[in-house]
Length: 218
Ligand code: ATP
Image (cartoon, rainbow, N blue to C red; front, side, top):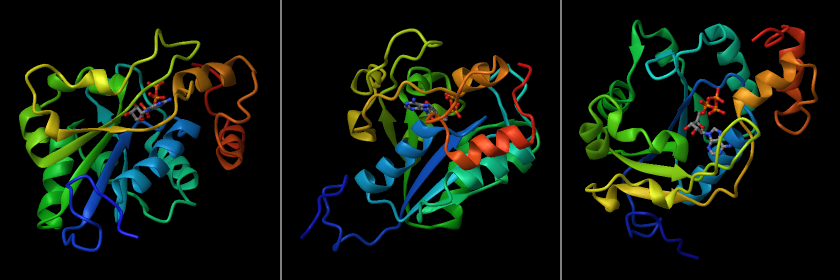
């Protein structure tokens, strides 16, 4: 059976490599991150999904957990997804993390590839403030998943409503992720207050958090 892909080409006719880019603090990686990664691979027919634990993300004010822990947890969290490749380059880069630098580097390393930037709708809302936003749009298709309400986030955010006015809709795609009320903020809060995180993170992540005493004070 021939499957339809984003560009309108059938899978057997396409030639360029399809590379997904999924960045996050992953502090910790949780069930919605994995569901989003799996869905993106399937819906976008990705050859590879590059997962970038972020370094010093310019838009996060909180001090993140040490890079080695977030890297180790990302490796555990996405271990069963064959297309996933954890990339530590943003963790190693000095100074603030800018998505455009990562995309430019991937494009240089993989000439002719099609890049897909995978983000939740909370990130999409602020996309037009990102460093060199127009260049990001030129290089990558922006793939947005809706984000559900959690106890600690106000209101659910619909993926389709997040294309900033005046921008080419052709550079955006909606990811059909069922709403998942999971956030790393909520998980950190639960650990700090001795609440259960079963089902919100995978068992290896829960064990890692317990073993390394992460998030006991926030
Ligand atoms: P925090 O609560 O600390 O801000 P987070 O849960 O948003 O963390 P990140 O590591 O910052 O996790 O997220 C990485 C990416 O995954 C972002 O693009 C974010 O929008 C997306 N994402 C995270 N959780 C969800 C969710 N429940 N539904 C859809 N997208 C999500």
